[in-house]
Length: 214
Ligand SMILES: [Zn+2]
Image: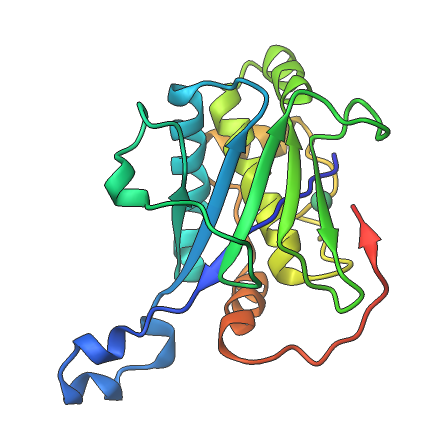
């Protein structure tokens, strides 16, 4: 399956809140913050959207990336806890838009991310009708599938071009076993992918790549 997402990340300057001795801690111990504005143009609904966001957040935790969701439906999440949606910026604030279906792509495509020539992107779309079809075929909840698709597309935006892998969350197509792993919370980013995503928050990426849509 194909996915595209957009995400924004923000670095937390937590060191300012810690005693001086805390600076001796390894860099990996400091989480970075990824802000994601989520737009529900497909009418997914608050409950499913909240569960999907929780799934995606869990997937990013081993990478030490904390996801903050912005402008989710008011009845599903406290407005004060998530703030307002603002303009996208790489890598700290990315945008995900959920549509019913893709216009132009194969109808089985679940997501699509948009990357610049430098291999960076802030925007991705997700398509809900293919998610529901996968739910019917595999008897796995739509929120679980959607949450993994959101994480997959955010992964594209943070990892850059040609970021599909042979195994795990970033496979181009998930088979039945992958979805079973997803239902068990075992479909994840690899350690190498996690390191690469985090590196986007800590230094400029020198790569220059061809624009692509996947
Ligand atoms: Zn993909």
